[in-house]
Image (cartoon, rainbow, N blue to C red):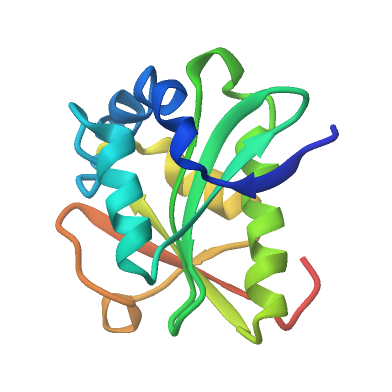
Length: 154
C-alpha cells in the first residue's frame, strides 16, 4: 500500500465538504461543523496548534488531524466511506506518528469516542493502550483516551 501525506490546502474545501462533516459527526468529533466542514477545519488550522494532513494514494482518501505540542495527540482520523476498512486510516495515523516522533515527542494520545466503538479496536491495533482517566490529556464527554509510547518499536 503506497500511502502518503500532504498538507491540507484551502482548495481541498469542495472535496472535504462532500464527506468530512458526516464522518466527523459519526464519531462525535464536534470541532468540525457538519454543515461547514472544510471552513471549520481551515479556521482551526489557521488559529494554530492543530495540524492536518490529507491521506492519499493516487487520489485523496482521507484526513488526519493532530497536534505535536505536549501532549502530542491525534485528534481525528477520517477516511471517505468508499475507502474504509482497507488500512488507509491506519497507514495515515502511522505516518503522522513518525512526524510527531521526529518533533521529539515520546508518546502520543488518541481518542476513542463511545459512539464509535470500533475506534478502540482501531487504536489498539496500532499499539495504543487505554489509559486511566487521571492520565487523559483532556476530558471530553463520551471519549476514552489511549496512549502509545513512541520510544519503543511497535
